[in-house]
Structures are given as C-alpha cells and as structure tokens.
Image 1 (cartoon, rainbow, N blue to C red):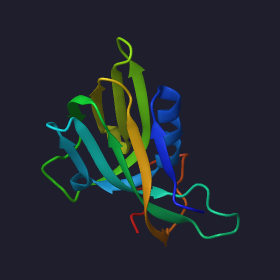
Image 2: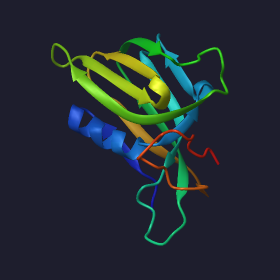
Image 3: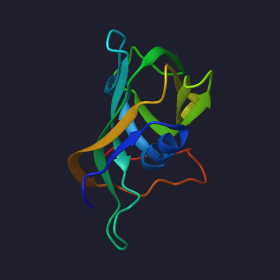
Image 4: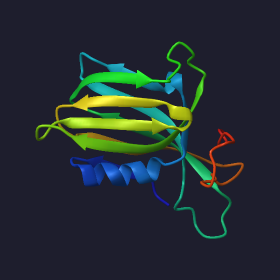
Amino acid sequence: MELLKLAALDADDLAIISTHLQDAVLRTGDLAYLPRERRFALVARRFDWESPDGAPPRRRLTGLHFERVLAVRCRNIPRDEPDSPLELLAITFEPGEAPSGTATLVFAGGGAIRLELECIEAAMKDLGPVWQADSKPLHASHDRPLDAA
C-alpha cells in the first residue's frame, strides 16, 4: 500500500480520517497546540486496517494536523507526563454556527481533546515507517492496552 494522504474540509471527510486513525497509539508528548499558528498537530502510530489479507498486522507512523483552531480543551489527558500512552478511538465533529464547530479526539479511558474550529481544515499523512504490530486491536473490550510496537 502506498502512503495514505487525506484532507478534510467537512464532517464527512473528517469521519474518513477518523476511520483510518481508529486504534492509533500515541504519547501525550506527540501532541502539540500552536496557538499563534492556530494549529493542532499530532504524530501517531496508526493500525493499518488495509493490510493485505494474510499479511501480518502492521502499524504506520502518521501525522495529523488541524488548521484554524481557536481553542483546545483537554479532559483526562496527562499533559505533564509526555510518555503517557494514549489510544485514539475516534474523531467526532459537532457543528456550530456554520462553518465553525468542535472536533473531539476521543481516547480510551475517558480522555478527550476538544478543538474549537473556525472551520474544518485538517490533513492526515503517512510519514513512511511501517512495522509489524504485535496483534490486531480488539473491539469487544478496551481493557488491555493496544500494542505500541
């Protein structure tokens, strides 16, 4: 599979990015809010759900950034612990007064990051490295941490 590169300009586009980032693992230190640039960015190790049949499960290093970010709020994210692991479950969008709204990054364990957006302008891009994952993420329960290998 070639490197994946996606852009989001509306809620439907953002839902596609969310699907590709489902079960991505990252650390708190992989998150950055740049208020002067009005940008929020992260680097994650996404599970490659499109691996060829019969191939071992794998992860890819992927970057995601949002532009036109007006504010960021966190809940249950240990910001003072840069090595703390996070498991991204989904990215949702709640519209406000068009074209504004709130994107929420939902993490296992009740963590969330809310991005107040002027409008949806996001991009996701695989950064190159690919490696074999220890296992495929389970969805019946998130009681065990996902592999970060």
